[in-house]
Length: 360
Length: 125
Image (cartoon, rainbow over all chains, first blue to last red; front, side, top):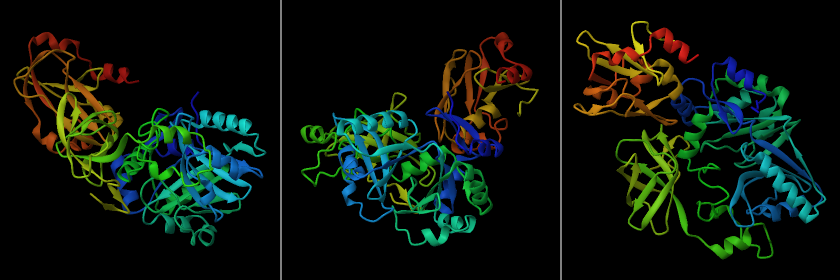
């Protein structure tokens, strides 16, 4: 059954091209995906991300429960409002989902998970809650909407559009958020630009969106969201990692915290036993064409595979994330098979672009 | 929806102009370019290639995805539009002014199966 965000009617009224995304009827663009992409790199754009799910975990042992649930360590969250990116692993060390967890108080954490995985995430977390006999409770907040406003001018435009937002958010550091009233405003995103993600009651979403549009924030669809995150070198669940892939092989070792030897999070033993066999690096296509997911990559050290690919509006070239043999290094020349032909590509470090600048 | 009455169409979203000499000029419809989004790459057939009706002979890539373009009739490719290859965004700007290839039908009756503007409109709802 198709699901709709609180902003669905707003998108349709604006003439957005709507597509199915993980069971949600979502805007892919409002005209030109490339123009929306540039708006975020150069000015400010906004995305309806209400299809993602906020989960509120509350209770006296919430922190301990999360320390066992996810691969990154929430023990390092000390300042209220601070956010942490992490994978949630299965016992085999595969990625059930990637998520952001916000530390709101010692007894209150908010976890934001992907739309397409939300149901299985909730089921898994509840299974873990029973297994660990936690005294915490979990609430799925489908009563909330989420709007991401991103770009070099995103913060000032938010302050102009949303009364009361400036005093609470002006001092926020990257990856930190704060409540004002029922609204949570965090300096996070998925584009490689500065900006905010605002979580607010569903009933206020349309008016807030309109106010942001009036302040000159470009409405952007999921199309631009994908090209922006790929330029920023950020992985997409289901493409760049999934339950069959270890975060160590997906370029996400930096999110796996092994420092506390006594912390027995799910998947830890499997990661230690299996080690690292692959790495994630960027590719830039030097011949003409467009890289896509699941194309074969031929390197001097064996075969690899693209996991995400697209045309980069900032570089005006095709780029990809690829899972490659260990030992392949940035600068290496490789070939990618596209429709039976081998095209030339170059291995690069990610991100490809960030803060309005091409980096490769 | 922009569907010029003087052109013919396929259910796979190609438009076809029947020229005075019986050759065909082919592009993709406005409906198709809108569904694809920003076009960034075209791979067109070489002149002289013999193609079958409904054979996938060209590829159009938008930022979003790659799609095949099909031969509307059996015939020989006469020419591909290099200007479109060099500036693929022209397909978005004006899908009917941006032809992709010209084809000489093997058989003059090959065009009989093509859709009229009204039929194409009906096929896309």
